[in-house]
Length: 378
Image (cartoon, rainbow, N blue to C red):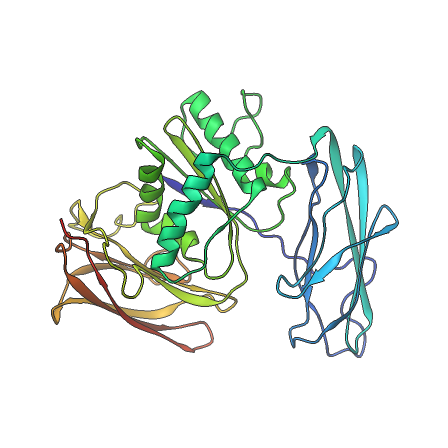
């Protein structure tokens, strides 16, 4: 199993006018925008993230496509101006121009271009029964952590299915595709999603060798690095694809802050052990470890203040400490806002474990969590 994070594009929005103006103390925040590459879809979502850090209202929100004003909407919950074309855009270059103003501020402007390829698809297919099944399985995991359901996304489903098919066709496992080979869609997950009009950050997980979709999903979730994107709070888009024994998942990102723990508070039927391989290997720097270990406990901070520091953690059974391997941002270069508590030995079946984690975020705010979970009876 391998996990890869896509790119996030952050811009200063230095479009037709600069956002910082002389004498101005207010400056809007900006994030992702797009699409801006060559597209294989002709009705892409056009999106500009821009918001007021002090929460003030938007008073002007206008978007033009090829000098024509379109019915774009500013969605405060998404902090973005968005538009989906009513009809297919013609093949060729298209120019986007945006104007956004906040109460008591000038109107800020920016723009970009993208190109629709010949024979681009107007619409992507609806999810298959197997894709819906993967979503339902993962939403059961989300429920156990007290999180809202993932939402199915056609772009993510399509990209995941195409990459799973590529891996099956060539009997490979990984994130990259080779130009010229059958089924090639893009070298990286970022390229594959971008050509479908995806805007923003994403995570891709791949796995192989499992006998059915439930086992494939659990193999991804049970592995601590792969579990992290599944722990995102809020509404998060999701897609999956499986061909033969090859499976790919694509996970978008939300903008909700929070601190998530897995297994969740009060969760029952938690597995007692973990014996799978993961890349990167979370046990790579722990000497003397044996497989299987106990089921990994994962905690992660989400939001703008994402750095987790000074982590201290303990797992107890009936008031007695349980030996764990602890991965934190201080000893694991793959982590910035998360920690893994991996019991050194399999957990006891039908037992209730108490967990405590404490640390600080990058501003020094305390991050503290104490909870319990119960393992499955064997």
